[in-house]
Image (tube, protein in one colour):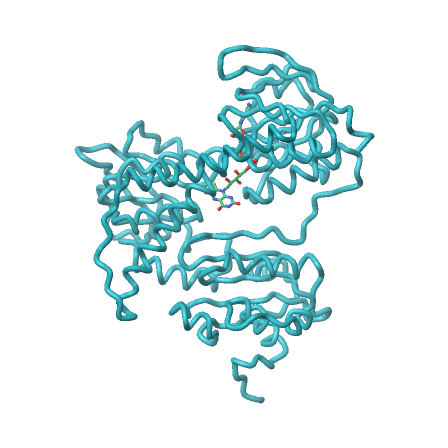
Length: 473
Ligand SMILES: Cc1cc2nc3c(=O)[nH]c(=O)nc-3n(C[C@H](O)[C@H](O)[C@H](O)COP(=O)(O)OP(=O)(O)OC[C@H]3O[C@@H](n4cnc5c(N)ncnc54)[C@H](O)[C@@H]3O)c2cc1C
């Protein structure tokens, strides 16, 4: 890449957005400096997000399956949990992955600086190294990839080790007898699932009338039914009005029309009420970068800010705050810097909730289409009719396609069930490739797999699914 090979590029923040951008920039021949406080690249996703949470969710699933196995005539005794070893295993996973990213940086000759960056001008950064040294360096382009951090509720602020956020919850310092999760979003439900499997009595409080507010209700229902069994209580339409440390716990006061017990004491409370963009970067006001009222840095489709030298990607530029969105934005920004004709305008950014069952969706959701008065046709395939689901004893799932009735193009896919997070990738490909329901119905899917549910949902669209009988009208 001759035109970009002389460019000096700095990337601030080495999460999945920042390191993907830095690596591609190096591959395109740019001279790259990647700055982050951690020893190696990885960011929130690898150190205190996606990866440690999924490692622990894997364990939770294993424990849950072992208990469920009694239905199949296999009786395991209750697990003995060695928390120190579990923690060590999770940390090994993180160390291996982040170490691998460090190695990939070195192989690509990316200059990785452990430290923090502040703006001096639009093209100059003050870099404070972890060891204390400071330097100012000039760059042709700067990519901001500073991510996000857990949002707080100022009125509920309590300086107590009994109050956790997602980071401290993943540290797994102990397994509290009782845990209240404030917030029924995906992070709260995932971490609640982990603690419930390890033995905590978990309650979830959500101010809205349902869990996972962004997802279609029919996808959430099977999950709700299952978590009702593993959680102590799910309090909807309820807010936490106050929290107070008291004796050996936190006294929580609830408020809302459905509240039966106004006060309860929990051993620990996990606050997971969303995330806040890290746009409060020192010196950002010395540039022309604009930040919107919610704290997101404003960018165009090339991820360029209002300051032509500065690009921004990932959680710091907006929803959905997901690792794969960050990486793709990072790659788009670098291509734009390299002078390629690119834009970040995906038709489908998949979202996965790694609970049990998993929920995954991509493209247009049914509720979004309804809100926009968009004409759509829904085709649902219930997993009760799936041979594979039956062999797994997990028939509560459902696969649905959201289809444009005129062109028969697949606009969206929603799945609830075990492995939904893996299955949704086919939906993303179908949407991005402009596949029609017939394309999916005619693609031979392997038997017996859960992927057949996508093919059969397409057959349902035509009223001809092999395993769903529809009486003739
Ligand atoms: C518990 C949990 C589970 C999650 N699970 C998933 C999941 O399963 N799938 C998924 O897609 N997403 C998941 N996420 C979200 C995902 O972690 C984020 O969307 C993703 O990490 C965003 O990437 P990013 O590159 O924008 O920034 P981040 O990963 O947030 O990284 C930003 C980095 O920039 C650094 N930084 C900030 N300021 C400066 C500065 N001034 N100088 C230098 N460095 C700076 C930060 O320290 C950080 O290391 C999860 C998040 C959490 C908390």
